[in-house]
Structure formats: structure tokens, C-alpha cells
Image 1 (spheres, rainbow, N blue to C red):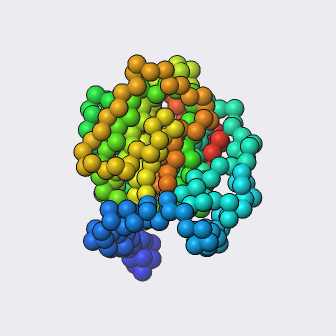
Image 2: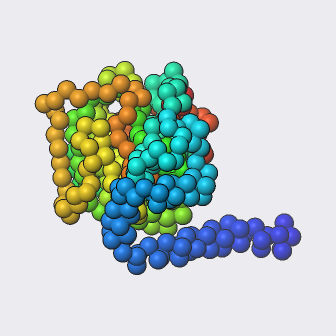
Image 3: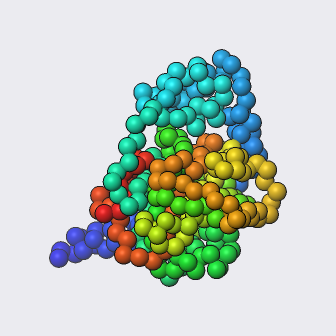
Length: 304
């Protein structure tokens, strides 16, 4: 190989990835300095306010800015939404997201951040970054151990996406944990630049018992908060946060029979964020069409 070509090849293998990593860290540096909690509270107040024409103008501007497809909304009229939250958590038309005939289906619209096998208890976040299942679920090592060498999928919901979360398979709710934390953005640049991002941000951990057919044992859906995410809600509890008391909160539903079918709505983001799913060890194979960064739609097959 000529010397100049060899030099360029070596630079591509060593220098450029390092420059990219440094660039990502620099890009997220301002987030460490921003008053993220205060900004999120203000955003939540505005999003829940019913301000008439001002709210409608903000919704129209948002639709234009993010190219939101209102044709698939149950109510496509921006003026019909009393608050920004009502618009953001808008329902879809019946039949807009048919369920694939698969054991597991995608629970959201969005993009794939990462997916794959859990390495013992480590989940891959981005090049050079991992986080543990124990940290993700709020420090409960016994719960996390159920997913040792299991499978995960991290799915990012952008501002333009549909923001309700649905069940990937049938399950019975057994537990919910609200874990306090940071409120970094969860966009791809931040995922590359903030170590342990999804186990650092505020999150709601929802534990389900599988039906023995789609999933043997328990599986988990983690709703991860972010900057400007006013709150997260579940269909059985309502709004989980606020309040934000600053300590872990834990609810048990073992003595209740709260069951969901595949495709049922289980929660929603009031402003967007990320869902992390954990499944136990099995012969599970993800949809071969899935790729990190690829677009996904609610109801499409998640497994082969």
C-alpha cells in the first residue's frame, strides 16, 4: 500500500472516530450546565395550559416545523386540541397501525437507537458506552438478574412521532417503579456523548408477567424522561410525574389482575422521549430488517 494511502487509512481508523467522539461530548456539554429541571417544569406548565388561539398557533407551528402527519390523526384539526399536551398525545385513526402477525410487535413509532443481546448485565448504548440492567431498573439486582444475557431494544421517539406506547405482547402488570434522575436530551448525539444516559435520566419502569407464549417469564418497558418532557403517564395510574419527590417510588400490582393484550395502549409521553425494553434470555431473533437509526412503526414485527 503506498505510504500516503496507508496514512489516510490509519487516520480513518484512529483519528476520525476520536474526533467524532470528542465532537459528541462537546455538543452535549451545554446540557450539563442548563437548568434542565426548571426548563422541564416550565415546558410542562405551557403544554398543559389551555390558551386558546395561542395554543393553536403553537400547535400549527410545531406541525410545520416537524412535518407532523396529521392525516393519520383521529382528529386532524389543530384547533380541536385544547392544550399542547392534548395534541402531543393525540390518538390515531382506527386501523392506522395494524398489528403484524408476530410474537412481538414494535410498541411505538420512532427510530431504533440500539437493540440486541444483553452481555451478562450490560446494555449497549453507543460506541464506548454501556449501562447495567440493575442501574436501569432503579438498583433492584434481583429484578435485573431476570434479564441476564437476555435481549433489549432502545427506541427513540422524535418530536414528530405518535407518542402513545403500546404493548409488544400480552402481559399482566406486576410492578411499577418511578426512578428519579437527570433530564438530559435523549437524541442520538446525546446518546453518543453522555455515559449511561438511559440509566441516569428520570424513568418509569413497568414490569409485566408474560403470557407464557410470546414471553416466558417477566419483561420490562422503561419509559425514559428527557429535557422538556413534562411528564409520563400510564393507563392504570395516570400521570406518574409530577410529583418529583426526589426519591424512588415503587408500586406493586401482584394482588391485582391488570392484564393487557398485544397492541393495547399502556402509557404515553407528554412530550417525547425513549422506551427501553428488556426480555429474558431465549432464542429470540430480532426482525432482520431492523438497523440502528432505522425508522420503526407501531405494530410492525419486532422479531423474525
